[in-house]
Amino acid sequence: MGRLWTIVGVGVAAASGFVGYYGSIGKREIEGPALIHEQVMKEFMKGDVGKQFHKETHRFDWRVPQRESDAGVMQYGFTHNLFFDLSMDKFTRSSENESDRDAKKRKDGNVKDPTLFITAPSFVSSRTSFLGMATEVFDNFAVTEPPSYGANSQKLRPEHYCDVVFDHALTTQVHLAQVAFETEKISVVAAGHEAINVLRLAQRNPELFDRIILINPTFRGPLPTARFDLEQRGESGKSELLSTLQSVMWEIYKMPYLRDALHHFSSSPENIKKQLMSHVFEDPEYISPNVVSKFVEFSKQGPCVGKCAFLVGKMDFLKSREELADLIKGGVKVPTLVVMGYNSPETSKEDVKPLQDAAKTDKNLTFLTTRGALRSYEEFPHEIANIIKPHFQKESN
Image 1 (cartoon, rainbow, N blue to C red):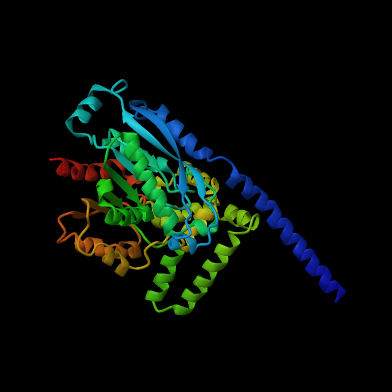
Image 2 (cartoon, helix red, strand yellow; image 1 turned 135 degrees about the vertical axis):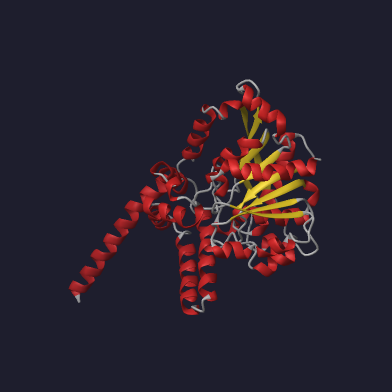
């Protein structure tokens, strides 16, 4: 018995040391400043395209008032005001560093409408992912992310990952973009889960928007999607096992050091490359060592709780295709373009079938299928930008 306890003690000590060592590494990676986003932005601004733009970073305080009468908030157990600093980068094209060809192209049909680009919540969120597409045809735009993702690296607590908080944040970002561009309405381009959130807001408050563009919209996180696929194949036992795994992962990500160690291994180059190849990009040749390295840093840096929240479905504010169909029953309330990559996961494409079906009769809604997967706008920026541009011109005429 003494030997058994010795073995157990050694095992516990070894496990504690393992978690402590890799937890410390992960903690330093996660809690450090989001330097990779700044580096990518600086490199872009030094390039020929970046030199054509004047960039301003707008920072603003984001408060979510907590009132006892607000049952939708109080059910999550908040006991004080949330107070965070959000940012967006605003770009205005300047003629100073343009070639004659670029100046003519801009004069002949670039989009002048102020437009806010919001990237999707994920392990690898970054506002910089929109720069290639936005600079193709837009002269006045801003880029940002949801709170706690990308350069918006606020340390939200686990209970904050709910629709009440993120709906308020999105509304705040839209209002601040209107102020920054001095306009009453603004166009918004959003991807992934944030595309669905923008649609939800537009259905509630259409007066805020000029038009919205939803690129590869999704409403299921990776693990809920895997569970759904298992259920569709009749593998309920595996689905239940995965459900348990989701719950365990969420609890682990609430624990300092343990979550940091797990996130460190989740952000390995091998795992990130696998994800990029499975559903993010279409062409394996695009996924170069430099691309993988950049996405590894995107995954490592910034708060990891939000990344887990996306993974396990805490950011899924719609739960089914039926809920999406109900959301747009009676028609969309602002001009809406949906762009879906042909090589996106089959479940993701089927999930937005209500939008595709509604577009057949709703004059305010257009649904287009393009090449690419869930980051089609990053892999094929020129093509996606020029698919979007006519939507602005049509509404402007």
